[in-house]
Image (tube, rainbow, N blue to C red; front, top):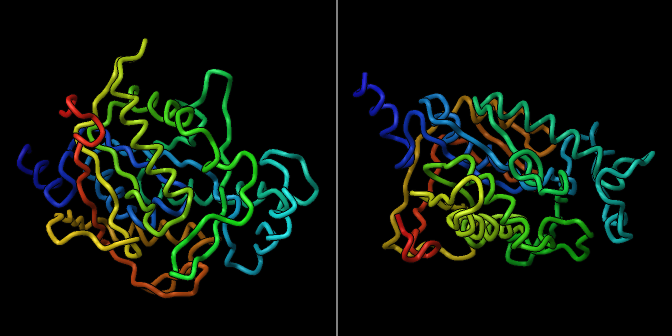
Length: 303
């Protein structure tokens, strides 16, 4: 029995195993599926406790299906300083509330397809501040001349990338202390493809890992044994040749089903998918990661 259990985890990330917790931290609904969905599904099926933290609801995302186009926030509304999420409006697209609700539903369906049972919105649940739950808004983006995402020309109040890093890191640190994960997975420092919310998610996670290691009143501090960054297909710069990539062959069928759930963001045809850029890519179970040196975060506390 023990040999069978060990075999189930051989193709997954080091540190994954039965009855341990793997924490994935992502910026928007659909990110978890596109870059880590196969890994999350395979780990969950093998018995790892998989927990996802999502930082925003993707209120400013582009919308693919024509029948849902009314949910997309227009550039003019952003430039005019649209209302904060939660504002009661007869035109929910103006502040992203309608799209946020749709993407919440999509994420729930995607996580069901991946077999992931635990999800936390940053600012709620284990990550809620003492004053009560809060919502961090999608910061938006624009495409740069290099084909990578860049900060939007207008970033609204309440946006995730504008929130004080120390405050958001403390919220995630509380969850890390409570969950005591064996490993944490998030983006590399460049955010994968440059989106400011992805970059901020990396910064948030690294700061939270450090903060979580500091003993708190309750629960006590926790040093995460293994930390991984996702390898992007559109990095700011290529990985050095001497950096080892960890390749995971995950659950392809579960990933495809989860992609289909994110219908505002992803079009699936056969074994291929496209985002709003209409660039078709193969759906693959292969996902790559690199280990983050714990000494960069913990120093002398390195496990």
